[in-house]
Image 1 (tube, helix red, strand yellow):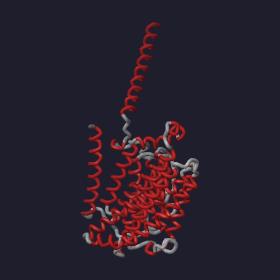
Image 2 (tube, rainbow, N blue to C red; image 1 turned 120 degrees about the vertical axis):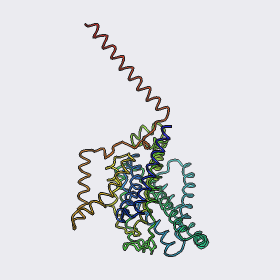
Image 3 (cartoon, rainbow, N blue to C red; image 1 turned 120 degrees about the horizontal axis):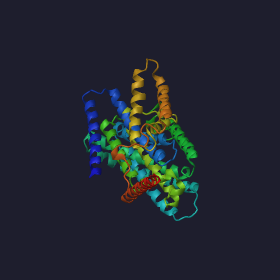
Image 4 (tube, rainbow, N blue to C red; image 1 turned 90 degrees about the horizontal axis):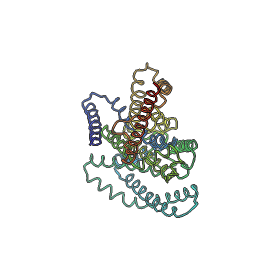
Length: 432
């Protein structure tokens, strides 16, 4: 009953805040500047929650989150651009079929390779990569046949509904694309130690940025315009969209961490050897966490692309990849509450208050003020803003067996303390 009340209270407060901000924007009380800042804060929350899952909860030091964020942004933008500007569902159809075919190939290859003993990670990666290329070629060939029928079907819908439907599908497909890419990348790099894993994922982010710089020539996506930046993206990421995604992802993360899979993920961070001794598949838990965290980044990228309607590769350079890392450290590693609060604080302070209130010509000094604030907090409170604290709804709930064991331990400790106290009193009385 208490759990239901906590859940109902959390959801009620969250929905109230979402609707309150929507009303403030709708009535013009919040201007467009702060409206954009709030949406960027929500997007950063989703990215940072994914990284917190990978690093703060599973213990894998990753700097590749920004690369998956970029993949999601450009993938979703390409789908909606083709629909709004070219009046074609080609991006939607091709991306959907590629993801379905590649995902199917991954399942088949995974079952086949599971029967082969002693296969090294690089050989498995080569097989998966070949399967990915083959699946993509087949999907594109089939997609060219289906583009016109799907476009015609969507055209029958009211224009606004069709646009929103394409937008939603684009966001979801962008997240799945980032997840599949992370699975492929994780085959060789997840076998590396934490520091080397961080370097490898940083290299991945740099590769993605270079590819985006040459997306119009090297990749053949003329509409992305490479280093000049992509324009003409519909501005569809309203507050209700981004806030709803934040709420859903917070709930999903909370439920994951309170499941048996979540406890296995945490155990890998605490002690890999002990977790392996208890029968936990370390490689599997690392892969699952990395894929889910990258999925969140892809979803966030898709939402970000439709906030301002413009994308530039410089937004996704490796320097910016440290932003979500700073956020999760600022909020507290492993804390969902801290990540959410720190993400909005990051947006409001760095992009909002410091940009507005610093003297004219000193706007770039916000990149000095913000690290100084972070440095001071790290000196005074190294565990982060919230440490391990969570809102009641997000707190870990022990299973009945563990809860009973914990109660028994407390009872035993109390009895021992009482016995020691009685013995002490008796000895004192005898002495007197």
